[in-house]
Length: 77
Image (cartoon, rainbow, N blue to C red; front, side, top):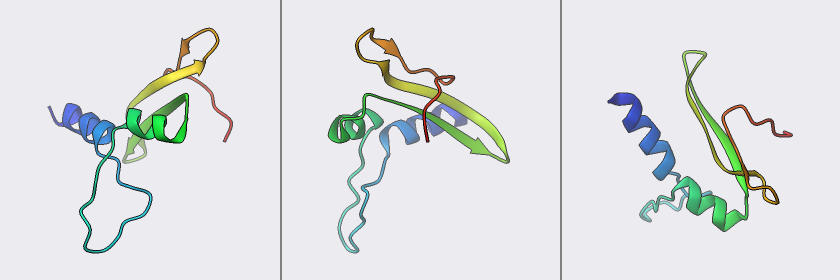
């Protein structure tokens, strides 16, 4: 489905922080980027036409208790 393709593209297609003209664009998964940046948890929402298309949590909100991040987990911005 189109939504499944969108989720897959977001989960596996993160571009590098810096793009160098003429160089290939290596892509990373959310998990790879989280590991590289030592981020224990993140929540992602994709918005289209002012509405949330989908939202999902990755990793842990609390490492000690292994409480997972969900789409409803609150983060400080």
